[in-house]
Image 1 (cartoon, rainbow, N blue to C red):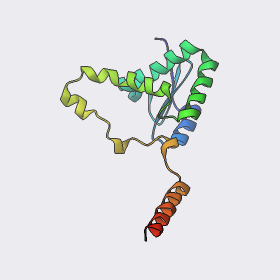
Image 2 (cartoon, helix red, strand yellow):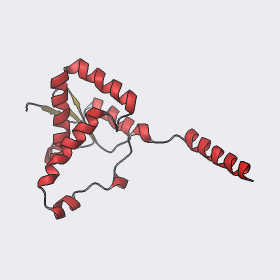
Image 3 (cartoon, rainbow, N blue to C red):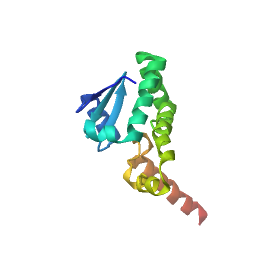
Image 4 (spheres, rainbow, N blue to C red):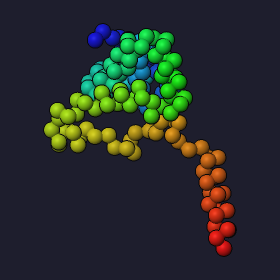
Length: 143
């Protein structure tokens, strides 16, 4: 598959800030934009490359502007993490692991505490205060 890699991309930098992540790879058309990671390090990660190549295929299948629109609508509807295009790409990124030995698979496993939550799944302080207020209110009615 034909693709370009753009290091220190301003587009990926914006995504990195929004996602509050140490590094980001994102696809626009057939270019993989990187921020916080070098081209060499990115290309050594077979799963990550497979994930981004899936997005390149999605752009090719749907067309550039149409895919951007579909991706945006899906993200607004269900959030980044549940976006069907992200789910498909995550599955593609994990396929290479089935050929690994169990020991190597365990050694390369991502620990949930090391992976930042997508921005749309984090609870705001208002939601936390609302929950606490409802909990306190519930205690008062039980008396």
